Amino acid sequence: MSQSNDSSNPEEKEHDLESIFQQKRILRSQVRKTLKSMDPSLRSHEDNAIQKIVLEAPWFKSSQRLCAYISCSALREVDTSKLLSQILQIPNADGDTKTRKKLYVPRVEDKNSHMRMFHISSIDDLIANSMNILEPAPVDADGNEREDVMQANEPVDLFLLPGLAFDRSGRRLGRGGG
Image 1 (cartoon, rainbow, N blue to C red):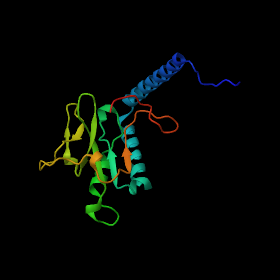
Image 2 (cartoon, rainbow, N blue to C red):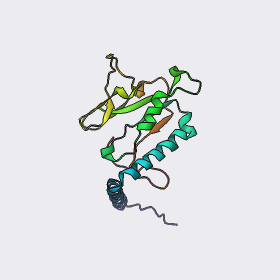
Image 3 (cartoon, rainbow, N blue to C red):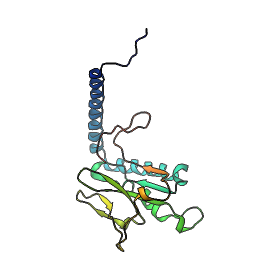
Image 4 (cartoon, helix red, strand yellow):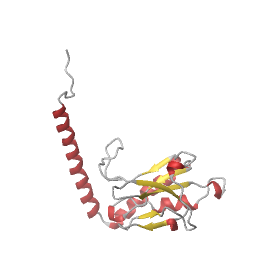
């Protein structure tokens, strides 16, 4: 009989998982420190480069319905302001503003960080929450309820999500809220 590399002992598996989680915590802490000490002009340059890559990508250009986060500089997230501005102002290739990209952004609903993604049509639809993070009000300026992505008639083609650190396969090294 051959022996598997996987441990069959549940306690060993739990220990292995905890070890991985600890390594991830250490790595995320190191990345946070690096980002905090990063020169602001270099950071701005990097943010612009990332946004340019996204804006020029065929998968971005062809997307019609997107969910994207509103960046928060205090959290050291990649700036999304140019992306959001482009999504909200540029009509589709046919020039029809009625068929421009549809954007949904997150709103924290409660103290447990449950989120909903609401449709916005302008940066002016955003208000600062208690942590000074911009998010949509649940109703628009006319008092109408905003469309929730979960009730949308058509599926989302693209999600733009923040991440502190990633593995070589592009997976987030996360265990945070949201």
